[in-house]
Image (tube, rainbow, N blue to C red; front, side, top):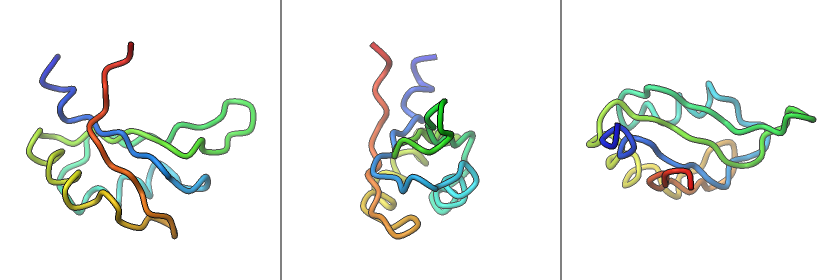
Length: 87
């Protein structure tokens, strides 16, 4: 289970209208995406500006951080870093 955390990425500064599919497509440039989820407000359904991507391997996760941090997605520069475990 602990190994899997290393494949998990936190994605910040997302445009509010980005979809899970767009997020997944953007991260496929770095490798195989296991899951991509934009966090949305339950009341409005609008994105909260961040999400999580799980890559299939730790190597692909590291590659995604190196290659995609600071890249533009729907007009905004995104932040990509290793996700921290929930406290």
